[in-house]
Image (tube, rainbow, N blue to C red; front, top):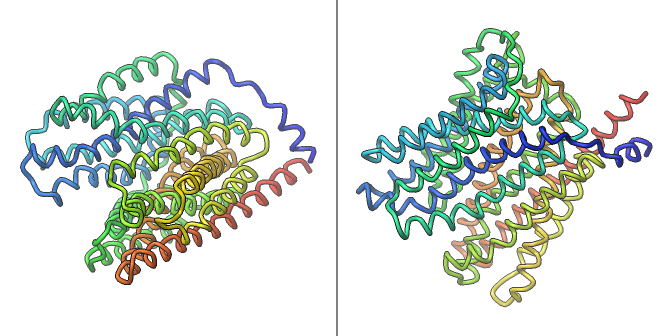
Length: 469
């Protein structure tokens, strides 16, 4: 209790740190907006470039795979060049690849450049979080991460609407040209306000580990993402997922024995970090499972059109964005475990009734549950990530940010695949059964996620007691 009373007096955050965090948030907004805005433009890209639906989907898939492949090497790059310098270089690469995408003469070139752009985005995300963590310290990390989450969370809300507006008036290259003015503003501000970070001589690159994780992680994310797409449960994706899982298993074995592993997996053996990673994994699974499930539910079960489903889901996204900011302040005051547990319980409470909802359910009740769910998501994911970052030293922060981002993406792919596979099986009976089963899976993920955040809360409190004795 004494620790909680001490934490209620929040230390102030210097103006320079707020400015640097705002610049990082602008870069994160750019990366997230690009993904959502391109998703809206895939049909325009397909028609303009004269390719099929399967090929044009690779414009989005290549970006995701490039982002996943870049995450493991980021801690080594942070140590070699400094987090701020690396973030600036990644932003510059993101801008250059945006220009190259806009000028791409065909779909093959566009897909190749999108993979490189995804790599730049992956480095930018982890390096930016490292910059913030080094600048503020653990006592102020929640508020700055909350502000970052608020700005970045607006991207999926703003992106589709901006994309639709621009495509109604211009051709598809405008989707990529839009990145340039925003990115130039962020780059100019970063040159002045973002600390460059310390350069330190890194150990030799762990090439076996890097090859294994750079092969296994994109394979797992791709295969599970494909398995989570309706009608894509073929044996090829199962083989790819199994191959990626084996590569990651060998990578884990190797990394626990290598003198200088590309990722410090031993961090997960620490109580707070291990509990935080488990919480992030399950929160990501629940969140991305719902991202795939809810639009289908509105359209197949309730009879809404695609545009109407997007409108009906918007309040949940806005609630998540707002409560991320609230969660930041609460995390600095009470700890990430306590806030994440509260958020998990809220998400669970809003998910339990979903298997019994249907066309006869009043829309106000559905919207109320989605608003509650959005608030719970905002209170659960960011505090768990912040607890992970706050539990490590400055020299380990790059590894922590990479691990959290990797775990969240793998969790999202697992959650999406589980929900949609179960849904597809149930739909062979009838829509009520299909969505009932799928929401049951979502509820089970929420239950296990709540257990993980309770573990995080306990580990965090035990760590605090040990530090004060």
